[in-house]
Image 1 (cartoon, rainbow, N blue to C red):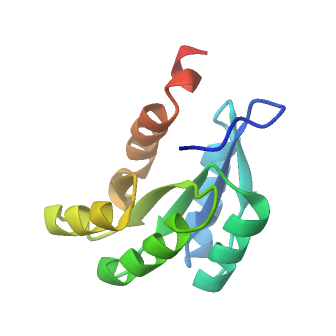
Image 2 (cartoon, one colour):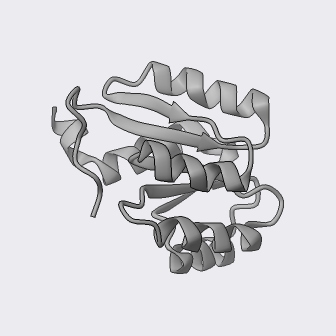
Length: 134
C-alpha cells in the first residue's frame, strides 16, 4: 500500500542515479509535473536506503546501471522497509528477462532510459490514478 498524500497533496519522488546529468534532467522534468515534488537525490545505494527511511518518498526512481541483476537486491531491501515507496527501476538494458526479474524482486515498473519521459508519465499515471483524474 502506498503512503497517503501529504498535506499539500503532492507525491514525493526520489531519484537514485549515479549520472549527475541524468539525475538533473529528471529533476528538471519532475519540477514541471503538477502534483509531484523532488524528495531527494541519494548518491549511493546506502544513501538511497537512508533517504527512503528519512524522507518517506512515494516513489524511488532507481537507476540499475549496467547490471540490473544487482539492483534486484536493493529493490528487495527497500521494499522490506516500513512504508516502502513504489519503485520505478531505470536501465539502459531493458529486456523482458530483466523486467521479469526486477518485478519479482518488487519493482513496480521498469523504464528504459531511452524512453524515460513517456515511460515515467505512464508509470506515474498507473501508480497514482487520482493524479490523472484531478
